Length: 167
Length: 418
Image (cartoon, rainbow over all chains, first blue to last red; front, side, top):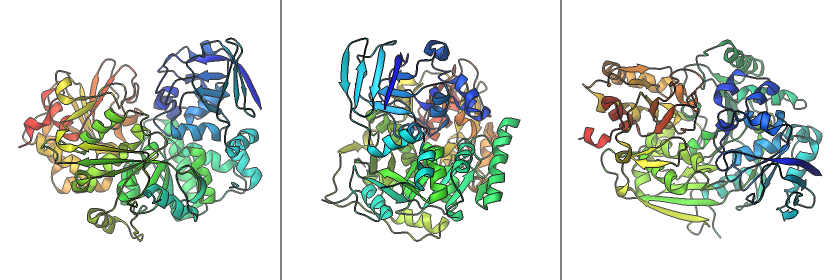
């Protein structure tokens, strides 16, 4: 499974919390995820969607998604067209929430990835190709269970398909 | 090799011997959602094949984040929750019952050794009752509601020991702010924390809840304390569930051990806009405030209201300051009324709000205006948290907030405590 996009480097590098991804003001007001997606990163960089312009891979520093358990955060990102996030580290609740919705999260060093770099992620080989910098980085492959969830599209689809979790 | 509390509780719920790093499917003793997360729990639950609530007495919903509803959109979410609760015959704690993290333990739903999951990040609060409790998102919750189980990666544990006597005017909030400033917001990501030491043992249950509540602010999955006589007394009062305390083994493997001397801790604040951006009250004592807030799942308990009422007794809130108080539950509200704390606080100029989250999440009530400064007993001060990204939020103990609303600027409470 491969994902390709030009990178979107966030203006704030570390500790991007779920309040910043989607503010509590919007998560309570808007139930339609397509509508919610319009306000993604609103308190942090209000021109995010314009700047992203269809790019689908976010690059961040450490502790991405810290703070509240609101699933509206990855949900808004998903509906804003985000398919993968590459960061030095993720906060735990966000990590589960994003995978449950089928967003790919990769933990690796991101210092050498610039905004607009051409990125290619191969989830099977665990290789991140930066076409712009002509460099390959190996990341720890995703656990088999999580890869299956991504293949099935979401944890709900995975659960329905298998009638539960297989461990 | 011995085991940590987290390893033991998760092993007990997976029916197999687990150690840090293992993945396992665990049976969950109790789960819940609040009004910010239950809408999506219900949507996700309805997407599950043949979904029905696995065990009706092991799930509840709480309307606390935006309660009573300030507008028709939120009313819709609240009614969606009420309709689901009726249809599936599950418990709902409606507006005014209080914050989920007070209502759930007061409702007797948690005991020692339990595995609890809530669709709210501060679910780690019940670690003070010797439970492994953690926050997850709405989809994870919906699967627990339908199947009674979820998967866990068993976390490594960081042991945090606090020893020494706290000075007068220094409280458990100051301890946890001090630790957060030291460990930083991602210092315990994916880890469980065991809080121990004589200072922790000497704290009341109300004060212990403040510490475990904020374990998530350093990224932790859970923050757990051992049970003692105080825990048993508290549980006796609220819960009928059998209590089997879980202790860590002497040779348990910790990823890190941190030791703090409580006697060196002074009144602390977290400065805008992150919880780990801490400073001593002394360092910020010239900062003027526009609003003070005492309440939330961190510090809206009876002891907190007693401290505030004691400091404010026969004193008035500064004329340039608005002072809001929200008891964490209706039970606490009633006790505070009976003790005369509420009338005393009103006499000083406090505005009493409905038990619940109050202005903490910025969805209703008490939204600051541009450039305003708030001092609050909550657990988060992110930009926009209280509803306005142009406001500045400082976090502190109830004593510091009470002293600050009197003087109209951030104030060391030690001058007010004999």
